[in-house]
Length: 312
Image 1 (cartoon, helix red, strand yellow):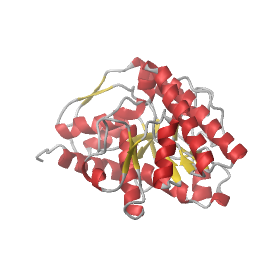
Image 2 (cartoon, one colour):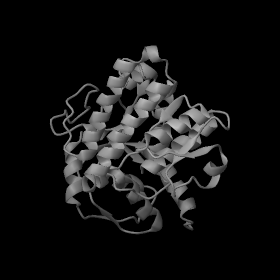
Image 3 (tube, helix red, strand yellow):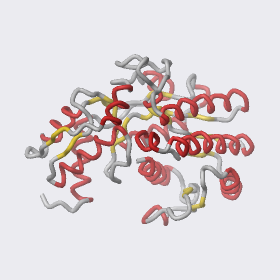
Image 4 (cartoon, one colour):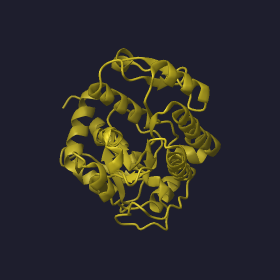
């Protein structure tokens, strides 16, 4: 799903800024395809290679880095060392380049920074962060490291804590909240959905266009307005599997769902808050999501119907 965020952010920044002003970084063998390949310059940039980052920043005179490299929650549990090397080693490289070349940095954090000791409902901006996962550990460390570089070196680092992100662009990629994407694919294809998360397990979610807008809006915000930099709670909706299932059934009445609980993802989900308080983001830089559950559901079904070539 992180590649989906990257694609959405890059494509939307292309709309916001003149052509040629955006440089898309990619690793060898994963070059941008389609419209993105024709939309502006690209460069091979491995997040674990500080020299590659510095060369791209210097060559293209980059002033803002959107650092979107990470492994998702369930994948990071299987590959903890790789998750740390990408999430923290890579962030350190980005911040060092930003310090030396005077760049701003956006690095997404996550609801995964919170653990079982955090307030479950409307978790406040400033709350205890004791995650149970390697993914969460990298995100907490990333928040602290980004704050350090701001205080110590005045690097303009900013971040949001994304909830589960829902998109029609790609299939789920191993995140705990990815069931909320997979369920739409099953519904549109006319398949019965096997839900890996138990009924009654609430998690915050957001539709991808709102996530992109949050990233761009925060980076465009006047620095003097920001009391919190790394990082802001942001959210759009909170639901459990039954709620999203019944919402989809309003548009696809014959859709069926059963439960096949994944113990690892369920354990992770139960350690996270049910909902976030994003009042600081709303007050400090005007955050306000566009998509609620119904509007997102309708758009997801419409977009996937076209993408999958389903004849209604």
